[in-house]
Image 1 (cartoon, rainbow, N blue to C red):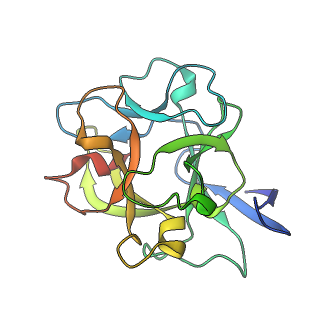
Image 2 (cartoon, rainbow, N blue to C red):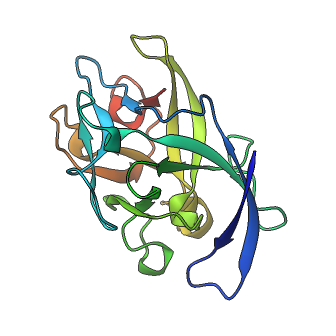
Length: 198
């Protein structure tokens, strides 16, 4: 367990948070459940800078595609989500310790259908936090699969945008498609692009 001091963007305070690793402490690929593909979550290109788009890609070709999944605790401030636990962040240690975030963040309303997912320095703000909801599925390699729903949408979205999941634009099976937020359909057959496994 490690203790970090996190500055919240747009806030007038610094909150002390606790971060613990989910699963293996080693960086790993986050694999998409879509059958017949070998897609993973990846930044677009090597040596990505803040604002780099997140895409589907496969197979693993570079360390920049490895992610560490970390549960974030901000006592007294952060609500437990629908999964019954605190949210996680998706940190890319080989990309300057940047995290998967929604483009524009909360201030720009970055929590509706079609919002792009990008890399951004880790601040543990709502747009960088994800509720990891078990999907009750395993992939072809036996990994457990999850829906990652965005915490900003849960806390700040209107009644139609409270359950926005990480998925692949258009459900594309082709490498290079953008990762976006979209209403969580909760259907691994019709919308397998919204399930991520590790």
